[in-house]
Image (cartoon, rainbow, N blue to C red; front, side, top):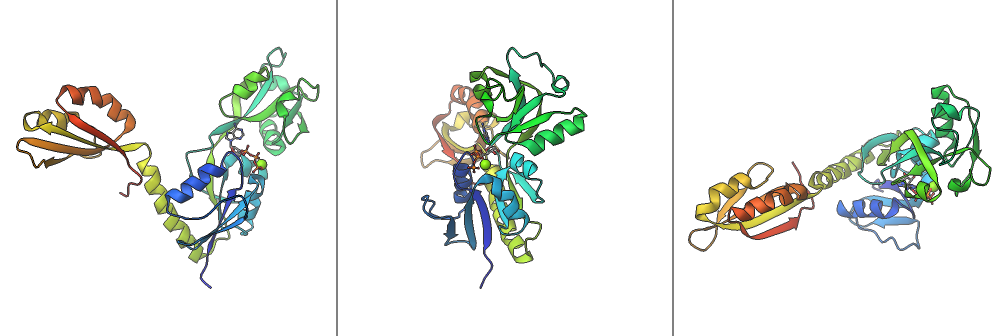
Length: 287
Ligand code: ATP
Ligand code: MG
C-alpha cells in the first residue's frame, strides 16, 4: 500500500480554521464536518488526524503523525522532540507574566518566592530557573486571569495576543514576555524517506502560498502618451508587462505588487493618467 502522510491538526480552537485554510490553499481536499477525527485527502496521499493541540507534539515526536501544525508554545511546554520546519504566519501570541494593577510586584525579579498561576508550568519553571529566581507554580487548566483576585496566586503567566483580556481583568503585563510564539509546521524525527518526499512537495506549495502573501495583481489602461510615466510609477516585482490594446494609441499595464505599495502608488498613477484600474488576488507565486 502506498505511504500516506499523516498530518496532525488542532480539531477545534484558535489554530483549527487557519490550519484547514492553509491545507486547502495548497490543494488538499477534505471534509471537516466535526463528525470524523481522521480525514482522508482524495487528491494527495495524506490523512488528517484531528487532535487537542496539547497532544500534537507527542503524536509527531513518536511518529504516530508525520507532521503537524501547532503553536510553538505548545511544543516548548511539551518538551517533545519534533523538527520545526517553518513558521506559518498565524497564531502569533506571547507567554507573558502579568500582575494586578495595584500589585507591589513590578518586575520579573521582584516575583521571587511568589506564586504564579499558569497553564504552562514547564515553560514558566524553565524561564525562572534560567533567571535564577525561585517561584511557586499554581497549575490551572483555564481561567488563569482570576487567580490573583481569588487569592490563589500573586501573578499569572498566560498566553496573550492583544492584551485586552488582561486589561479586562485589571492585570498588567511585565516585560519581557517569557517567549513569543506562532503556529509552526513540525515534522517527526522518525519520518521515512518516502514521506519526507511528500513533505517536500507540500513545503514547495506552502512556499508558493507564502510568497504570494499580501501581493495583488494590478491591471490598468492608459494612453500611449502617458505610458512611460506610468511605467516608472507602477510598483512591480521586476517591471510591468506592457500590452497594446485593440484600440489605437492605448495600452494595458500589468504587474504584481503588495497591497500597501498599490495604495501608495494609486494617487500618482491616477494623476499620471491611469484608468480602468483592477486589483486582483494572487494565490501563489512560484519563483
Ligand atoms: P485544545 O482544545 O486544542 O487543547 P486550547 O484551548 O488549548 O485548544 P486554543 O485556545 O485554541 O487552545 O489556542 C491554540 C493556540 O493558539 C495556542 O496554543 C497559541 O499557540 C495560539 N494563540 C494565539 N493567540 C492566542 C490567545 N489569545 N490565547 C490563547 N492562544 C492563542
Ligand atoms: Mg490545548
